[in-house]
Image (cartoon, rainbow, N blue to C red; front, side, top):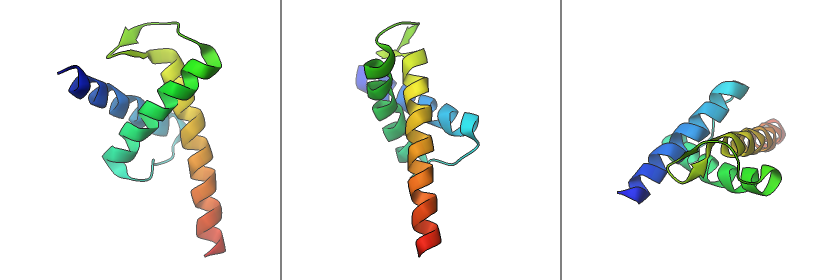
Length: 84
């Protein structure tokens, strides 16, 4: 049950990051989950572990990391789309 909860929270964090930036995460729901997980990892590296914990994620660092990740990925996909 803990793994499913982590998937849900990771998806919500990735979705919120896309919503805050106003950009879609490529891959839909799976992209949101991946952005949430990788964002949580990046956020913990950048900001450490602080803030409320939900589903094993420190929410604030995970959200900041996911925002950075979604921004970088959207820039990469936009540049690939222009060159094609």
